Length: 418
Ligand code: RNT
Ligand code: ZN
Image (cartoon, rainbow, N blue to C red; front, side, top):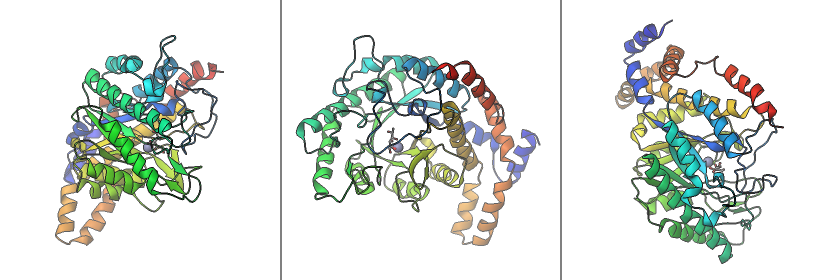
């Protein structure tokens, strides 16, 4: 079947494939830099383990060890991903010129100039994240620490990151989503659950007292249910993060990571709940297996359901800021990047190729029989042809043609990284 035939089939179902293709190409989706080096960054000793309840497992050869290697790997990945891409950076990916190392509380915009140059040359926007983990100043708490010196260090880090985010937004002429996530929590039953949360709230207040332009910088707070080593208590829980954002309109938006909830909860259902109150929300799309395992995003039921909600709630017009967040060190890291990004694009396209208005009308008219049948039969429309056309128009390989490119790069470059 050709794209033209597929298009006709969709038209018969009341769907414009052309509109879907045009819309998807205009929506920014952020690719996270940290899949390329197992979340290590460049500012601390790479032999130290990750902290903050996150883990990268696997030792597939070829991890990027320097900014140059990470950028080269990103270039390959980006060349295989369709759509409007942004890069999502962490503060730990600062690029220091000789002798210009700065600790996290002293980071300056100039430490991200190399990333600005990288993004500008490729027409990319950038999102940003302060890095409140994998650092000697985690005691192990950060923004919620009872130790004032620790807390002050991390507040100063957050403020530095606001300035860097403003710089990235201005230099690149695109909104910068700045996400606050800490792994702060306790392994066992706390004696005080309120104190750390009050300190966390006060710390975020201080960070957001740093001047910024909310049209350009979108600070968010990401919640989490638990992490390895912090099983009993997470300071930045769902209620904490949502309440913080709700209490600070025009300053802060909520961020949901779909790996950060109890396994029977689904973020797809939470998206419209939040959009009933918040003008803007942010997402980290990942794939949890039993816990926040950060597996590569697949074209699976929940990814499709999340994208369906983004599309039919009007999220593509800026209300939902979309980013990916996973890290798998057990497979070729570039393949992991590309597969996850393409799957997020696929799921968005799939959602755009749904007769959402017609389905909504069936629900409102109480015609649940038609809704049940048609929602399910829609699954076998010739989606693959429209996806292939999207890849062609974006100038990237179709399914089946990109992995050989990654393999070639693996042989030529990655395998030489001993
Ligand atoms: C961790 C959070 C957080 C991190 C990144 C590296 O559980 O999901 O978003 O993955 O900041
Ligand atoms: Zn996340």
